[in-house]
Length: 432
Image (cartoon, rainbow, N blue to C red; front, side, top):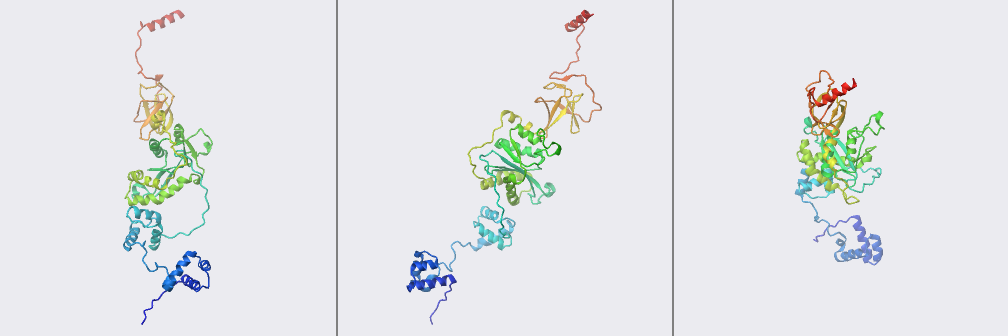
């Protein structure tokens, strides 16, 4: 009994076999066969020679039934899917692929990871929708020319330690417009103190940018209707940036500062998961992780080359450097009372008898609340000596002292025979 091998062909291969038979029987030319099969003449001749030599088996691809050289080992597939369920269950395909390679040394394509996530029910394939074309504003030419800045409130810790941190935390984010370089720090809020602390660190590390592009939040812009158009009225932030010669640009919409808004979205997708894997549950740990690990990784991945070389960040001049703590403080004007006290936020501060500069009653002084919690009172760029009173004075007394000076006032009265007194008496006698 003859052993006959069953050969299966798909419709495409059956069609090719018929055309090759016609070519072998000289019913058509090689050129016509090439046109019908949509193959090159050289490829048609190769298939014809195989059919002549092996018969109908020559039409079938030699790799059919063979195991692919690129097939992933079954043990690796099982291990990868286990990791997807245990660690990366809410990761998108790209982030899961990165961590499988970086953390678990499993190198597979993005599409393979996407297929596994869909098979395991961990990712739902999204329907492609027609996206409205968005025209991005052209990037600035140089690094340091403009920084986009924003505060992003989000559940960064995924409700871990929510008793201490609350449901949402604030991440302050700065993105260089030319290169996309990211600087970020967790803060208690987007208030002026937190923002000043962010820019104090930024300036010490990188220098003064030419401009900052941000929204119209009350920290950055006065939004009261009655002073909206008064350019003389500034927020503490605007006043400080003016003293540092940094231009402030207020965006009229979130889309206008799209680069920092887009980065906020990227960070919201990545950072909470990264902190979960690193077991980070406090603000202090998170800021250390941002600086040492996460932000360098993000910049390496998303940073672009600026059109022009060089760095337009400027070093603070001597005055700016020496007065940086003063500039980045909350400043308020107050008036010296008749008893040389100053009232501020419900407390009373008594000026001492000797001061580095002459102080008169009703002088306008500057009260500075520094970022380290220190309170300073200055007059004509000199810091005054004072102490806090335990309670409000019983009654404001009009002290006879005309002014507080560098020397302590004396109660000494010259005797009657003093030359000054003699001159005074002589003048009085002459008038009589």
